[in-house]
Length: 330
Image (cartoon, rainbow, N blue to C red):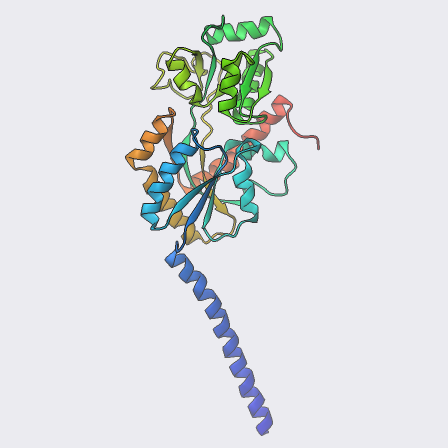
């Protein structure tokens, strides 16, 4: 009898110990969320240093560092059309210490590349930050002086009108092919590694036109390049005399919104802290000023709105990719 009582008591203590262990493992996770961040945060972007993505992100990171009380360090991972940061999140700890920029090409990955993750389900959306400004330029001495003449040349010379972009299946490539489809013409795409390379190719006469973010702006202002169109909902404040694709009747608006994500499974409290910090950071005047240098504007979306936007965009990209015949073979 004494032995049975002893074993019963031992079992009771074991149960209490197990409960205590569960409690102890749960408490640190809660404490980590409450005390977050306690070390530097890495912010990975998909484009090269010094460009229209990198410069505003460095201002934003500096602003967020002051709010969060820890350094926010920008890391450049260019290549593959800007999708590498989002892909990295699939093998990153969901602790809030690594954020990634999500660019539009991420949403067409399921239809153009074989991947084993889902851009909607396998990323946790934090905040949308801004949208790009795009435009199409030709050399100043080009005989093509308007967008109408650009289309007319393509009709008269099928497949001979070349244009450069930062890469195949980027938003710029897809939009130019959509433009060709809508206008009933055929262009010839020349992919480059970035806008510094494409600008030199255009200035050197190796390509007839370039579609890109405003890396072309200084050349347009100096008179070396001619801007034929911009792609926003309204005309550019910097180039108010240049028409949009929409007002030219080409039925395209493209600003390619981008924002931040963390790995799936990140504590919602940490996601909220990051959202609040970056929202405050993007509302600071210096961030808006950094965007204005590239003719861009802030474009805020909450975590929930950004997640919905991603789900809607994946569906839209599927339709465009299939329409253009660019979907990967099944």
